[in-house]
Length: 509
Image (tube, rainbow, N blue to C red):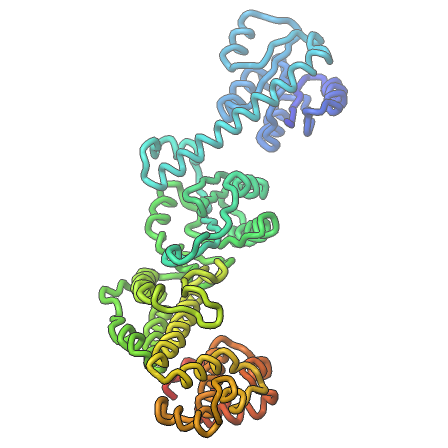
C-alpha cells in the first residue's frame, strides 16, 4: 500500500478526488494541498510514495516543486496534470521519469485503478532493491570486503547516526566441540522485518548468523529503543537477544572504526549473562594475559583420583579466569580442560546406566555463559573422579567390589542398612567390615556415610536446599543430616553454602 499526495489549485477538487481514492485497496493514506508551499511542507513531513501534481500551481511553479521532490527523493513516483498539455512540459515529465502526464480531467477512475497497483509494484520492488543494496554495502563496508566504498555508504547515510549491535544469544565458541546442536538460529529475514517494524530505524545490516547492525537518526533514546527491540524479538521468536551500544551521533566512518575497536565487547556477554544491554562507554578491554595458567597440577590430581585437591585446583583456576573477564584466556583454558576430559571418554563408564561416558549431553543454554560452562566442566570433573573411584575398587576382592558398587548405586535409599549390603554380597556384617577395614581402611558404615557426604557437598555447591538434598542422599531427617555433615566437615550445610557464596570455601576443609 502507498500514501498519495494530491496537489492542485482547487483544493476542494483535490479533496473530492482524495475521497474517491481512499476507496481503492492499494491506498493507505491521502493528503491534499492547494498551493505549492503547502505541497512542499506536506511532502517533506509525510514522505508519500506518489505525488499527483498540477503544473500550473499558484505561488510556486509546479515544475520547480517536481524537480525539488525528484532531487530529494528520486524513488517518489510523480504524475502530472495541467489544463493544457505542452511539449515543453512533456519533456520535463520524461526527464523526471514521471508515471504519466495528463490533461485536467483526463485521468478517469478506471485509469486510476490500472495505475495504482502498478505504482505499488514498482515502489515495493524499488524498496526491496534499495534495502538489498544498502545491506550489502553496509555489511561489506564493516567487514572490509570488496564491493563497498566510503562514497556509496556516505551517500546512503549522509548524516549523524546512533549505532548499536543486536546479537542473538548463543553458545560460547569454546563449547561448540561438546554439543551436537548449537541451538535454534532465528531466520534472518524475520529478524530484519521485526527491527524495521519498530520504526525510526535508518538502516539494518546482517553481519553474521547471529549479529545485526542497527542505525538510527540521532536524537531518540537509543537505550529505550534497544530495550524495546529485545522485548519484541523475545516475544516473537522465543529467543533472547543482547544489545551493544557502540556510539551515538557519529557518521558512518566513525561507526565503523568504533565497531572494529569494540569488537571484543561482544564476548563480554558471555560473562554477564543472557538478554544483556552493554554500553561500550562503560567497559574497558580486558588486559591481555600472555601466560595461560598451567593445568599440570589439575591433570595430575585428576589422574591420581585425588578429588579434593583436583576440585580445589580447578576452582582456583576458573574463578580467576571468570574474574579476569578475558574471554581469550577462558577459551584457551576450556580447550585444554576438554582435551583432558576426552582422554577419559572411552575409559570410563557409568555403572548405573551402563552407557559410555560422553560429553555434551546437557541442554544447549548451559553453554550460553562462562559461569554455565565452568559449572558444567566442574560437574564433569566430579563425574570422572567418581568413576575413577570405582576403577580403583577393581583391585579389591570380589565381595568388597560388589559391596562398593551396591552402595554407590543405592546410597540414596533412607532405609539402606549395613545388613542390606552384607546380604547383597552374601556374607555376614562382621566379616564384610573386616574386609573393608583391610582393603579400604574403613568400615562399611563409614564408607556409606562418606559417599553420602561427598554427594551432599556436590549438591550444596550446585545450590540445592538442605531439606531437598537430605532425602536425596538417604536421610529422613534434615536435622540429623546437618549434624552428620557438620561432624564430617566442621561446618553446617548452610555455613558451607555461605562460604561458597563468598568464595572462602576450601574443598579440602
